[in-house]
Length: 75
Image (cartoon, rainbow, N blue to C red; front, side, top):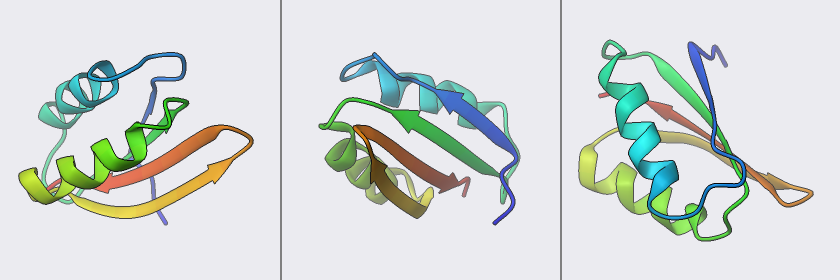
């Protein structure tokens, strides 16, 4: 999977990971991918809902050692 941009929001809690993601996506073009690394357990639900509400596709979600990795494709 090609990753166009990466965003590190480790240590931040809701709503900051989503707000930073919105900022990053706004600078990207349609079809590009953004990988987000987060530590807030609530981010799992937050990114699923964000994807559904905005139409940006959640391509990947994983959790390892307390870190969550998300890959979003900009609509």
